[in-house]
Structures are given as structure tokens and as C-alpha cells.
Length: 159
Image (cartoon, rainbow, N blue to C red; front, side):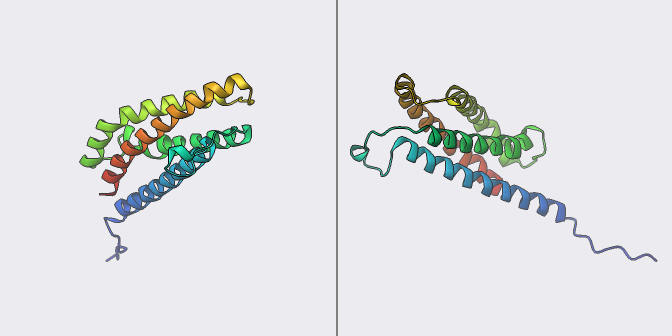
């Protein structure tokens, strides 16, 4: 008689959940970094809008923000949402949340990638600064909307 190794049938599911948990933690950390850098970039130092001083956007700061934002978007798309899109997620709550919220999340991705492409070669010229100010306001709204919807998907993943 051959002894069978002591195999836990739930182990692959536990490994997948641990992997998803790590991905969620990475995504949330990257998102937090994006928001911190966004606030630094836009001059937001506290919640009192009257105290915000107008400041100059430095090319290096914008480049750093764009890089962080693209890393965050890539983590969301390639490490989390692609798993759902490819059918590797079977939990009903996750699928329902993704079906409900992912189309808008994808729209924010498209907008943020367009913003990245538009300002990738930013050189700080006065004409560009005026457009950048308005565009950064829209980026903040897109990031906020994405964050709210993403949290709903992440909650379903962690349920």
C-alpha cells in the first residue's frame, strides 16, 4: 500500500487568495502614493482650499507623478482586472462588482492614459501650465471616482 501525501484540497484556493491579497495590498499602496504625489503636485497641503497657494509645477514632479500613476494603473489592469476579464475569478460577488463597476474604471484608465500621453513630454512652458492646471483638476476627479469604485471591487475580493 502506497502512502498518499497529506494534501489539503483547499491549499490552491488559499494560495490564490493570498496572491490576490498581496495584489490588493500592492494596488492600495500604489494608489495611496499616487494620491500623495498628486496632492504635492497640485499644491494641496490640507483640506482648506483657501490655504492652497498657487505654485509652479516642476517637470520632474510631473514626470514622477505620471510614472507612479502608470504603475498603479498597470497593477490594477494586469494584476487584478485582467484576472477577472480572463475568467479566473468565479466568486459571484466579485463578478457582480466587476460587471457593475469595471466599465467606469476602464473609462478612468483611458482618460488617465490620455493625460499621461499628453504630458509625457511636458517642459513647463507657460501655455502648457494653463492647460495642465485644468487637466489636473479632471485627473483628481477621475482618480477619486476610480478609487471609490475600485474599493467596491476590492471589498468583494476580500469578502
